[in-house]
Every structure is written in structure tokens, then in C-alpha cells.
Length: 361
Ligand SMILES: Cc1cc2nc3c(=O)[nH]c(=O)nc-3n(C[C@H](O)[C@H](O)[C@H](O)COP(=O)(O)O)c2cc1C
Image (cartoon, rainbow, N blue to C red; front, side, top):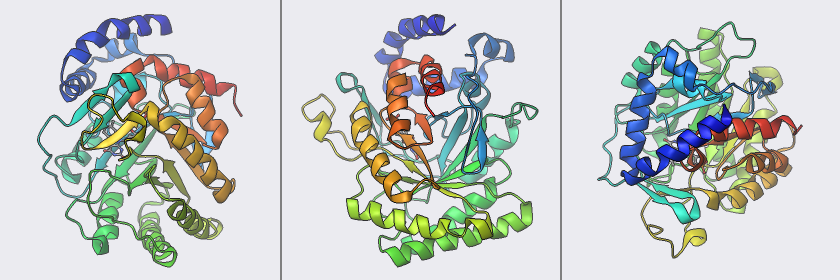
């Protein structure tokens, strides 16, 4: 099955790469959103069964889809059929956003990278929730360990830092019925203003304010999904240190409030040193793919040392093979996510990464 998928994607890739990158993305997502259950079964890759519990939540395996590919939650059943252990949808902010002029995604094939300045969900929370309500998730509620759904929340670009918690709070409230976990995206490379404070005390208060919202939601719904903070790979060492200390302080409360925190390391990068000289390298936006592999491995290792063993880390950035996934886990991540690797390698990468991780404990 794996070989058939690999050959099929190898045949399809030249056509997709002949299109504008965003057009190719839209075409593939439309096909995935419309495949019949029978076609889904035919295209499905057997999910690797390698259950693990992270941040208090069980996952069928350790390979997830990173945010941004299915921003609108329109193709969940087809994506689940590819064998992911978890799928993250969004980013979505409370209100819709106007996108910048296209082209908004550029391929850098020599570097196995992309640069994108795609915005947040165009319509905001209302259509996003309507899509979630329609998709009958979870797909297989009777599965011993179902595929997990992450909801990635952002602030609107125009939101002031002082209003950021209110934007995230709207997202948490609107989507709690579906989210197995939440991601708080504080690292959108295309947003000009920072929505999270830098100073330790202010950051702790900010996290506490989010936890107050979570406590209220837990009272109303009995749900306490873990929350992952998604960070930039470009953070300074001091910023990383401060964040780890603040997360540790919040996580000391888990035994009393049951609210788990984690981190996703990392979003796309605004740096260009690794791709300097390649065509398209100076385009505006966030860089993803192979150039992130080593810097993110180092960042994960540094954060694992500072966070200790109790705070979960999801490693995203530059995973294009089973070996890359293994190295990310060995660096200290609990789970991994893919995006750019799928564009260059196709869906077979999901199976390859999950199989490689079976051997790592
Ligand atoms: C076209 C594109 C759109 C993305 N959109 C989002 C997004 O909306 N929210 C987010 O948190 N990350 C977004 N990302 C970042 C990915 O989730 C991931 O963190 C990053 O690309 C690094 O992983 P990779 O090297 O495997 O692609 C996007 C990435 C790409 C390439």
C-alpha cells in the first residue's frame, strides 16, 4: 500500500508543482473534502497503531498534521484516512481577515522549503464552527483511541495586546465542544503586533488569565482540554527561558486545577540565512520545511532541559522523513507534526514517520 501511494504521488507531483502553490493546495483540499467514503477507504493508509498518552490525552500514534493545511476544517475524514494520530485545524481568530495579494505561497524546491504569507481563516469563528458541526467528528467514537482534533486559535491582526486574552477566550468558548486539545498561536509570522507579553511576571499573569477562562469552561462543560502554546523558532534564548519558567509556574498548579499546558515548537521562521541565494528566498512570509529541522531540534532539546519531563512538547518544522521524526522525538518532543514534508513527499510520509517512531520510546 505504501509503495502504491508513493508512486501515485510521484506521478501527481509534477502536475501539482506546475500550478501556483496556493492553487495546488486549493485543488487538493477540494478533492479531499469531496471524496466519497468508498474512495476514502481505497486511498486510506493503514493507521500505525502506537498509542501514547501526552498531556493527559491518549493519541493513536505520535504523528499529527500541523495547523494551516486544513485551516477551515473542510477535509477531516480524508485527512484522518491518511493515518494521522491527530489533526490540527485553524488558525482561526474571532473575526474574518482580509488576505494580502497573491501569490502567497512560494516553493523553494532546492531547499525543500516553502515561504507563505497566508492569513488566518478568512471567515473567522462563525463559519469555522459551522464546518466543525457538519463534519461529524469524532469519526469513530468507538475506537479505543480515536484520532484527536486540535483547534488552533489566533488573535485578529487588529487586536491590541491588551485584548488578546479576550480573542483567545472567544475561540476557546466557541470550539470547546470539538477540541481534544487547543493551540494558542502566539507566533504568526505575518502578524505585525505581539499578542503575548515578554516579561516573566506579565507572562505568568497572561497564562493565568487564560486558565481562568479554562476553569469557567470546565465548570460549564466538564471538559479540560490541554492547551499548547505555539512558539516561533526565532525566539531569543532569553525569551525561551522566560517562557519555560512561566509555563513551569503554571504547570505547578495542574494537581489542583487539572489544566495541562504544553508547547508546539515551532511555527514558521522569518529568518532566511539557511536559504540565502535560492530563488524566491527573499519573499515575505514564514519559512517552513527542511531549513527548520536542525534549529528546531536544538530548540526542542533546550526547552526539554528547561521544562523538565512534565510539560508536553509537540515538535513541528522540517520533518521530511522517518529519521527526521525519530530525531525530533530523541531531541525531547513527545509528538511530531508535519506540513511542508507532505508537499514534497506526499501522504506516505505519515506512515513512514509513524512507523519510524514505533521503535523509539
Ligand atoms: C502554507 C502554510 C500555512 C500555515 N498556516 C498556519 C496557521 O494558520 N497556523 C499555524 O499555527 N501554523 C501555520 N503554519 C505553520 C505550520 O503549522 C508548521 O508549524 C510549520 O510549517 C513548520 O512545519 P513544517 O516545516 O513541517 O511545515 C503554516 C505553514 C504553511 C506552510
